[in-house]
Image (cartoon, rainbow, N blue to C red):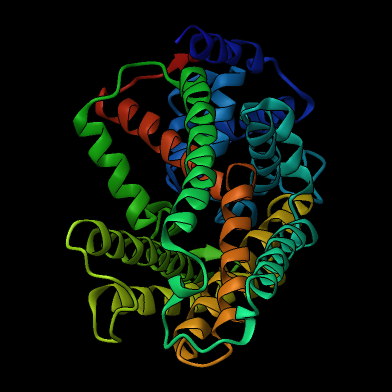
Length: 382
């Protein structure tokens, strides 16, 4: 417990202003004087509750920003104006700082800057090849037809132990990071009502609709709800796959029902629907990411975005292929590759784009607390 308290106390040292934080402070001062975008999103609403912006305010508001891009195209002071106000880009750069500074262990925060397509695929494919080598060494099981029984190749308990350790380690790292971040941005105790508001905003992606609920700007100033829809497909596809694994775990340990399960069983139906969502959603997000306006966001984060999207897409494609060909001699190869992508995802989860959902949810909670308490204009968030 003493070590945990020491980790939490590190948060106070992370609130020192940087060049990116200073830039957000500059543009927010201009925005707070203009107020044209006041009704656009929760970020601008939180801005109006402040007369000045401390580093903790800026880390909070940067993670509250959903990078919808509407303010950039509406702003009369945006580039090429000499004021150069670009809220989406400035906020995105601070978000990367947030991920890096609050990562645990902190030295691994550098992975946020390097966690691109090459690193993600190298880790995942490398683990997949390791599993393939195990299959070949283990009595030549690589091309064996096991009638869809995965555990005839990799024992259930061994998989549960290895993946459980990696998954719980990733969760622990993200919990510590989240506590440090929350200790930095929180100004008041959370309530159940505020938690409910934040959960609603997170699950509905309210702020990806913009203040007018017409959607985001992508390649130009036209509004679109595509990013919101693809995010929903990705998130709920992921949750359906998680539900599938959870139900299968209950089947195995609680009821003693052994895999493989039938195509119409609950775990398989949930996994199939989730896998389809995790194909359509990431493909759509990848397309939108490639065509986005160059002034939206931080170009240095594109590799991390693409790496994360590709990782999810690889998991879903190999998972669906494994389901389709599980009763053939290709099952061993597909299983090894799928396990490689899943474990690679778990290993990189605390140090990639997955973490942004946690920080953003905590920012939504802080925003809900302020709204619930009817916060009036104040100087900073000390």
